Image 1 (cartoon, one colour):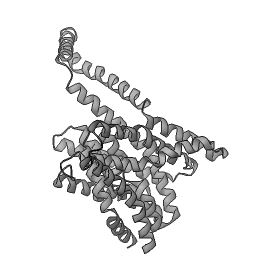
Image 2 (cartoon, helix red, strand yellow):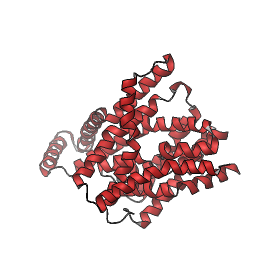
Image 3 (cartoon, rainbow, N blue to C red):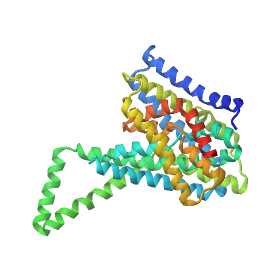
Image 4 (cartoon, rainbow, N blue to C red):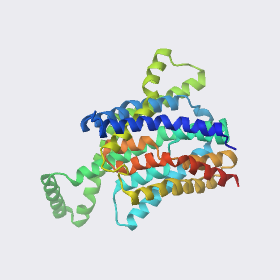
Length: 357
């Protein structure tokens, strides 16, 4: 059972983050300390420095030789089910917009495991839950954040292709007409598909390779394999240099959320109706998909409960930072972060008692 002391630890872990967010909001809304360009620069600092270093720190301290493979499989299935469901929904609604799929995927499958998850689940299930939750964080940092970046890049290139100059469109049409005369209608239909896919893939690949988060995850995984195999420690100078920036990463991310809030006319930037829908996706659809995935792979006991509980945590901050960077529905994800954290504790308690039945 959760005691008052445990509840205090949860509150103590969340209130400082709201302090950072409120200070950022006041700094722009009332004190006018930051210009829009400066706010954009702060978000870029979080995306390019703080978050990658935080990812490295988390990944490098997790033992990759002792991963819970059932939990890994359940996590993978949840993302697969969510992505498939979103694609079907978008097709039914005749919306082929990848941006909406990315937003729905972020809301339903990428919870705030690092900030709220550890204190809440430690209070509920002890240190075993912390170990399992850390593995979820590692999976997010190594795989899912990079998949998210990949989708953001693909979406950006697809927007670019829609707004390309008419001259380029004319050249392509002329080329297609020439191919039609030589090879008929079949050549006209197949050639554009062949010519578009590889340039998009190459462009996305180059951007991912140059992204600091990709470097941080790869280096963190490499160092974790070395550290837990041979017990090698990072030199103190390097470890402290990383810690200085990574420790402030979450606070800076919340600061960025506050700056974004101040730039909007309403705190609920996406509107009340969309906010309610976002909360439903986050706190109902996400845990439901994880429950189905966990049952499918045979998770039992504490592992099953932790899997459900972490899916019921509020929206993660990192997807918002990426969404702000790429300007893909940051209003919805900022609302998910802000109000998700406000109602996270009662919802977590409700799931805790439900799973205890």
